[in-house]
Length: 85
Image (cartoon, rainbow, N blue to C red; front, side):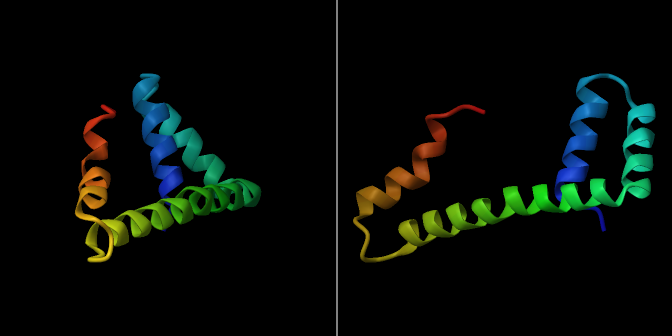
């Protein structure tokens, strides 16, 4: 199974640069041929996944914890509305 970073990079490069299938084939060939490339994809996957899980667990705990003031939990849950992605 390919790491999430591989799929994200493949999708962004192939679509945003309008290269399409040629780019997807090139990335796939590079992934299959290079153990260093596969290792880097795995490292990048961990680099993005571990902090994301930590932040989401912390935010969920702060919102769901009955000892955290309700205004703090509400502020955390609504903070995504301030920043349009």
